[in-house]
Image (cartoon, rainbow, N blue to C red):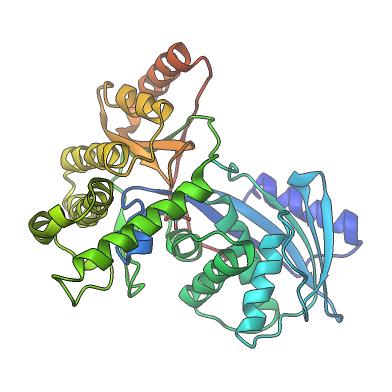
Length: 388
Ligand code: GLA
């Protein structure tokens, strides 16, 4: 089998830097989400796929208690830190491995010292979970080298904790779970409350097309937290009538209609997005299983409109890409993927229709926004794996 180009790159860079062979090469993917946006921090459902772009780590265990970590994509930036006592975060890329060690120590796990070289082809800031891929690749490598034997969902939770409490980004569990537990050829339906998963195979002849607006997320940190707070606000108001609810996951569309008048308009619309989106995730999973792609496509577009109008996390560039995609014959539907405010859309299309789709997206987007999108097919891949 021919080695992936990043496999070779990361191994050679490791050998050149440390004058020895790595013990392991580990790969952890980024993701796109088919549907279920901003539902994970509401205990809801998501349907992501792990993609064929990933973070790659060449790594070896040492006898001391230091981690020496180098990132090829950051001008070979290298940091050394103690795995017994992690220094405070400083906003650099190495916050991810430091955060993973921090979260392990919080769980009374003692990770070994390592030498490591990292590279990745998951675009940064594009809403494809480049940071979760880095957390999971380091987390898995440490788990293997330190013989912790963590279950993959435990590893995902640990990486999420690193991101929430050490890096300081209040994300949900979707990205780490799919990077850890993805399955080639499949989308993963995840209940973010119980972490139960079901895998749905993607139909033959259908492509998941990514169109990257090349607008990088800017507001997402603060706006993301504002959305979270609005969802919590909705729950606290609705609890007066529905004392049993813990999260918006527990509210049905009918209940929201019935008691929604008591919510401020903006809070009502945020809640409506989450409640209807949860229903869409389950419907898309069922339709994928039954092969009803026309209905899947319709639900993807409804999901986009809900993110645009009720959740207000789209931007004109993403709306243009979605509108242009669904004009093309053989494209079933499209929507923004990830947190929003920039990044990518995904479109589901017949493989035969992809050349026309790419040409149309390029033409319309460039004419309207004076910049080019990056359009490519992505193939559902496996979650984190040792590859050598
Ligand atoms: C980001 C977060 C995820 C999820 C999405 C929105 O990717 O990391 O946890 O909340 O946004 O669906």
